[in-house]
Image: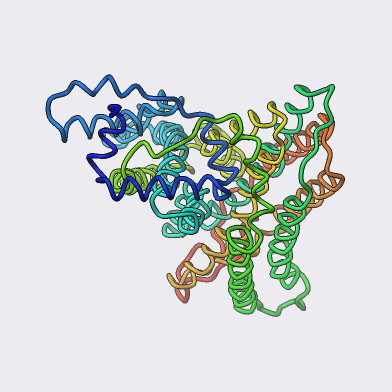
Length: 451
């Protein structure tokens, strides 16, 4: 038996090993998402011979898992940023340094969470595995948003989630189309319109739910207070958005799974047969540990963002909408671009549109519902500039993807749109407001996120 297989067998036993083998077959036959495939490009093979000669079995098993989880990614060079961020907080270094180091530390952790959920999916089967990936696909953004909600920094929450949507739709998709078009000038790049149309429809539904509270606020008669009715409308709309997202998951994993199988057909022809490299309980333990570290770093990011803004002379809105999504999700973004280079646009579109849909239809309404339970006035009113940016972005992307073909000019247009939005929030240095959504229900009045 090979050394890697020895550690795997020791932890799981023969029956569990067979279960993983069966799970692997069903997992690879249609449940791996575009996000997990894009992250897999940044992984690297570990050499089990480095730890196979150790004497103690438990130590050998632990070091083997450590080698796979920590050193099994090309982003391992960023892991030292995690202890440096903790040390910077402990020794009271500049708060902008804590913010920068925490943001860098989140980059490899986001990729490793994807790896660990994929490992667990080998044992749990396709349905649970698909749900895990659908839930953890944007775990970093969701955890940052929940900490911002806990600290009543609703403007940071809204800015960061909006930035994730804009980044995926314009920067990631635009870079993928641009690089793919330049790398395949003599080939016609085509993609499956069915997936793009489905995601566009869900994004438009999410946009409608965002616009209704905003339009209600502007349509109200002068002097009429509609904060409570807008909040109630936001909560009702959030429930509808979550119902739509659950329907999307059922559609993707069960009833119409064949539509999404095209994401990986070509990729599986070139890849070696994959298998679980660590056991179920090891993967679960590492996942819990890394989630706790992400939570710690997210708390640092949320707690120091104003200090970083003041120190760097950059607005909180620009940091939240532009910097945090780019750095925090760099691994997934790089994978999408690499697949575009390989003329596999279905996967690139799956990464960009799938992540944007998950943030819009799951993360945002979930924060509204959680805020409801915490008695925090979190609503769907993202204010005029932010909502208009989102609306125009979705419309531009929908028009760009309507014909099922791609070339580099489409990528240039999307990237320039993202640059224009980034420039807008860079020059617009509105102070972080004390708004309606900042405070506990019944304690203080509140307003929208933009001054």
